Amino acid sequence: MISSVSNSYDVTKDPRFLAFNRLATENYGGDKVADEDRYSISFSEFCEKLEKGEIVEPKNTANIANRYVEANWDFRVENTFEKINPELGNKVLEIIRKSYQLGMVNEDNMLLRNKAIYAYTHSV
Image (tube, rainbow, N blue to C red; front, side, top):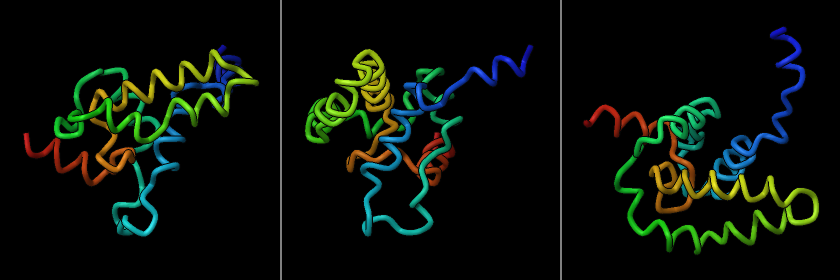
Protein backbone atom coordinates (compact mmCIF):
# COMPACT_ATOMS: atom_id res chain seq x y z
CA MET A 1 0.00 0.00 0.00
CA ILE A 2 2.78 2.45 0.87
CA SER A 3 4.59 1.79 -2.40
CA SER A 4 1.47 2.66 -4.42
CA VAL A 5 1.22 6.01 -2.64
CA SER A 6 4.88 6.85 -3.23
CA ASN A 7 4.64 5.76 -6.88
CA SER A 8 1.74 8.11 -7.49
CA TYR A 9 3.51 11.15 -6.01
CA ASP A 10 4.91 13.44 -8.68
CA VAL A 11 7.16 16.14 -7.22
CA THR A 12 6.91 18.14 -10.46
CA LYS A 13 3.23 18.72 -9.71
CA ASP A 14 3.68 19.53 -6.02
CA PRO A 15 3.13 23.29 -5.61
CA ARG A 16 5.28 23.28 -2.46
CA PHE A 17 8.23 21.86 -4.38
CA LEU A 18 7.72 24.23 -7.30
CA ALA A 19 7.59 27.24 -4.94
CA PHE A 20 10.62 25.96 -3.00
CA ASN A 21 12.54 25.47 -6.24
CA ARG A 22 11.87 29.01 -7.40
CA LEU A 23 12.65 30.61 -4.04
CA ALA A 24 15.82 28.57 -3.58
CA THR A 25 17.28 29.09 -7.05
CA GLU A 26 15.93 32.13 -8.85
CA ASN A 27 17.22 34.76 -6.43
CA TYR A 28 20.12 32.88 -4.93
CA GLY A 29 22.38 35.95 -4.92
CA GLY A 30 25.12 34.89 -7.31
CA ASP A 31 28.47 36.31 -6.29
CA LYS A 32 26.98 38.11 -3.26
CA VAL A 33 26.65 34.84 -1.34
CA ALA A 34 29.62 33.22 0.39
CA ASP A 35 30.08 29.50 -0.20
CA GLU A 36 29.03 28.55 3.33
CA ASP A 37 25.74 30.44 2.87
CA ARG A 38 25.03 29.32 -0.68
CA TYR A 39 22.61 26.51 0.15
CA SER A 40 19.03 27.09 1.25
CA ILE A 41 17.04 25.12 3.74
CA SER A 42 16.00 21.69 2.52
CA PHE A 43 12.66 20.96 0.92
CA SER A 44 11.54 18.97 3.96
CA GLU A 45 12.46 21.88 6.28
CA PHE A 46 10.60 24.26 3.97
CA CYS A 47 7.45 22.08 4.13
CA GLU A 48 7.75 21.76 7.89
CA LYS A 49 7.95 25.55 8.32
CA LEU A 50 4.93 26.05 6.04
CA GLU A 51 2.89 23.49 7.97
CA LYS A 52 3.78 24.95 11.35
CA GLY A 53 2.82 28.40 10.13
CA GLU A 54 5.12 30.09 12.65
CA ILE A 55 7.26 33.08 11.80
CA VAL A 56 10.76 31.84 11.05
CA GLU A 57 12.62 35.18 11.00
CA PRO A 58 10.64 38.23 12.21
CA LYS A 59 12.92 40.83 10.61
CA ASN A 60 12.07 39.37 7.18
CA THR A 61 8.37 40.14 7.62
CA ALA A 62 8.95 43.89 7.22
CA ASN A 63 7.90 45.39 3.88
CA ILE A 64 6.89 42.01 2.49
CA ALA A 65 4.32 43.48 0.10
CA ASN A 66 6.93 45.74 -1.50
CA ARG A 67 9.59 43.05 -1.67
CA TYR A 68 7.14 40.54 -3.16
CA VAL A 69 6.10 43.04 -5.85
CA GLU A 70 9.72 44.05 -6.57
CA ALA A 71 10.62 40.39 -7.08
CA ASN A 72 7.88 40.26 -9.73
CA TRP A 73 6.67 36.83 -8.61
CA ASP A 74 3.17 37.17 -10.07
CA PHE A 75 4.48 37.76 -13.58
CA ARG A 76 7.26 35.18 -13.32
CA VAL A 77 5.02 32.37 -12.07
CA GLU A 78 1.97 33.23 -14.18
CA ASN A 79 4.15 33.46 -17.27
CA THR A 80 5.35 29.90 -16.65
CA PHE A 81 2.01 28.31 -15.76
CA GLU A 82 -0.65 30.31 -17.61
CA LYS A 83 -0.86 27.95 -20.58
CA ILE A 84 -0.02 24.63 -18.94
CA ASN A 85 -1.74 24.75 -15.55
CA PRO A 86 -2.97 28.11 -14.18
CA GLU A 87 -4.47 26.47 -11.08
CA LEU A 88 -1.09 24.99 -10.13
CA GLY A 89 0.52 28.40 -10.76
CA ASN A 90 -1.94 30.02 -8.34
CA LYS A 91 -1.07 27.44 -5.67
CA VAL A 92 2.65 28.12 -6.19
CA LEU A 93 2.04 31.86 -5.76
CA GLU A 94 0.07 31.25 -2.55
CA ILE A 95 3.00 29.30 -1.11
CA ILE A 96 5.52 31.94 -2.17
CA ARG A 97 3.37 34.62 -0.48
CA LYS A 98 3.11 32.51 2.67
CA SER A 99 6.89 32.06 2.66
CA TYR A 100 7.26 35.85 2.71
CA GLN A 101 4.66 36.17 5.49
CA LEU A 102 6.54 33.61 7.61
CA GLY A 103 9.84 35.43 7.14
CA MET A 104 11.44 32.61 5.15
CA VAL A 105 12.50 35.02 2.39
CA ASN A 106 15.18 37.59 3.17
CA GLU A 107 15.53 41.20 2.01
CA ASP A 108 17.24 40.01 -1.19
CA ASN A 109 14.21 37.82 -2.01
CA MET A 110 16.22 34.68 -1.34
CA LEU A 111 15.02 31.69 0.62
CA LEU A 112 16.68 31.64 4.04
CA ARG A 113 19.90 29.74 4.37
CA ASN A 114 20.53 27.07 6.98
CA LYS A 115 23.00 29.31 8.80
CA ALA A 116 20.46 32.15 9.11
CA ILE A 117 17.75 29.87 10.48
CA TYR A 118 20.16 28.26 12.94
CA ALA A 119 21.31 31.67 14.20
CA TYR A 120 17.75 32.88 14.73
CA THR A 121 16.44 29.73 16.42
CA HIS A 122 19.35 29.73 18.83
CA SER A 123 18.92 33.41 19.71
CA VAL A 124 15.38 33.09 21.10
